[in-house]
Length: 191
Image 1 (cartoon, rainbow, N blue to C red):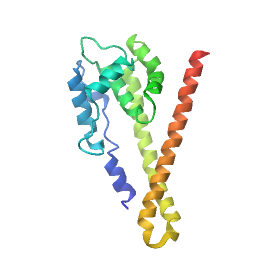
Image 2: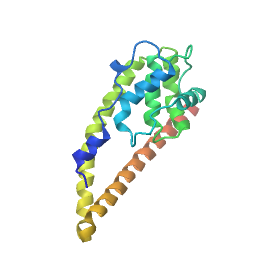
Image 3: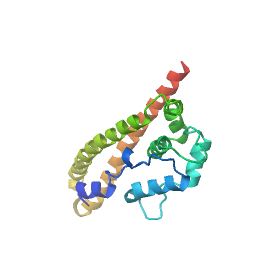
Image 4: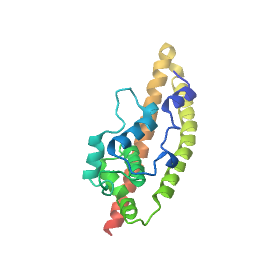
């Protein structure tokens, strides 16, 4: 089994779309897709995988996951919101993502929030989480190896299965915690 550093290197955690790499001019949909393809190319599971497609972006727009675009051009704010959607949709339903971003979208559309500042805070939290994740993966690998010690010759396979199960379990716990917070947001709005 690969060691923790090799696994973490393959994740390309440093691949993000920093604020300074988002053009200050409005972009057409193809340019938005190209920005994401370039920014997240190393995070793909396989080369055929699509990071973002026109259909995805159009569905986000139709679903009102971000405020309307002007003249088929996407502003820096739209790109930041699309990145948030891209990150959240792997763990939350599109409906939950819409609920989470509704207030931010409204504030951004009304220019009541500095979305660049919000996005920078989001990226800073991502970097912080990357450090925690690295430590946690190392701990989980050690625990899986400790637990597989009694399995003799099949130890490497057992290590991997235990580690995969552990990572999935942690992922489920984080997803469920996020869903509870989404529900609390919705309940707070209804009260």
